[in-house]
Image (cartoon, rainbow, N blue to C red; front, side):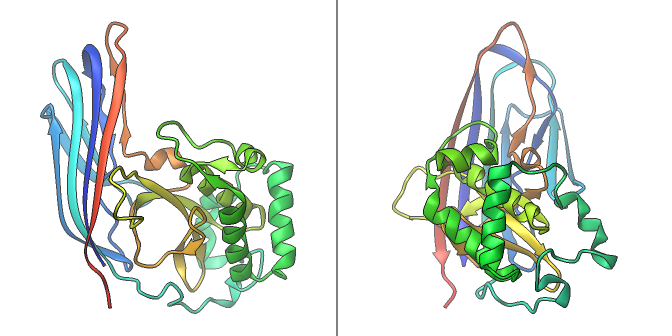
Length: 283
């Protein structure tokens, strides 16, 4: 499937400010599931300098810095991306991934940063344990059961700004944005020993909806399959309907724009527009 995506982001300030160096994460990932056909980025104001590099988790970062003052900062990105994975089950799990907890010893030991760093809330642990028992410790049954449970039990509600809320809050309120549902999925996976990361990107969605947003979903690492995406907001296992931009253990390291400004008590306003068109579909 070929996607044409345009993403406009702008920050308007109540008075002139000086921008700190900005980290921009808009460049799509390139792997076995998708390839980049074209990509352009334009910035206002024009930066004094720019550097493009890979971060520790394989994401392309554009770092820009500026001279002088401005009352506006905008990023316009356009891209064409082809998604390649028609069959979400095109893998053969290694024995280490068949049952829980997944065995990440030996060559998979480097995955430790995607395993739990803190103990999950009791309510989250109880949810994960109940699904694990129902799945009979089968890894894929657990993942499908978890995705289905969150899709059915958590009402999706858009929240345009702010970091993900705590998993226990999403579970208690049964309402959350896609990033909140993703973080809850991650906490449940880590509670049973599955390595998982947060992904930001775009999803095909409803083409008749004009105001689109950046989307979020989790990816789990399974020996024999590698990183595989689930979308508990929609109750699906990802194939060719998602375009990934950035992936990280910490959701903050997937934000499209990271940076700040300094000035005399200036206020800022964020505006964005996302347009997604499907140019063709795989047969």
